[in-house]
Length: 225
Image 1: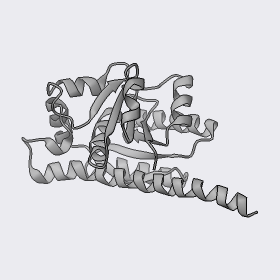
Image 2: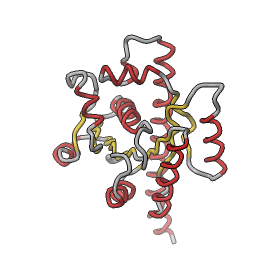
Image 3: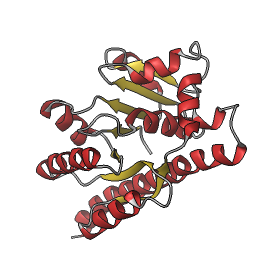
């Protein structure tokens, strides 16, 4: 397959966009050279990288301005966008990325932000995305379960997994490393934090593969008519 561009977007800040972008980039980097483009106005991913002196992340992080100089050298490009991007920026991302991840925290403000994000996608006729439940609180709270069921009833594309709310993510951000590289936490907690991004990464790869297969089969069908 050719270069793949994965966008991370939400109309609401604080939904786990940058955490998702960083840990998905770490997943893809294990497969092929991966570039993380920091399109957030407050440079969250760049600050994350800098906390480790630029040595903690296994992939390259660049700004939008730097992107044209580097993008051709990478198989996977992950774009971390700013919260509530302009209509123009959102349209550019939705129509030009190969797949979009829409993270949402199961709380009132997060759901409101998700609703407006989905409306934008619907207006653009975009269907190459999935919603990722992020920072899901543990039982006995049922916020994540209730939101998942609501989205299923509305036939909104969802990832099979969800990202739990764990202090491991705070430790990873403080150290400037992917969550799998956290040192001062219990191994089982680190494994719980890593597992969702492995699953999400595999789901994205499967979606991209199916999309590529569908696109290549269309010309054959047309030629056979």
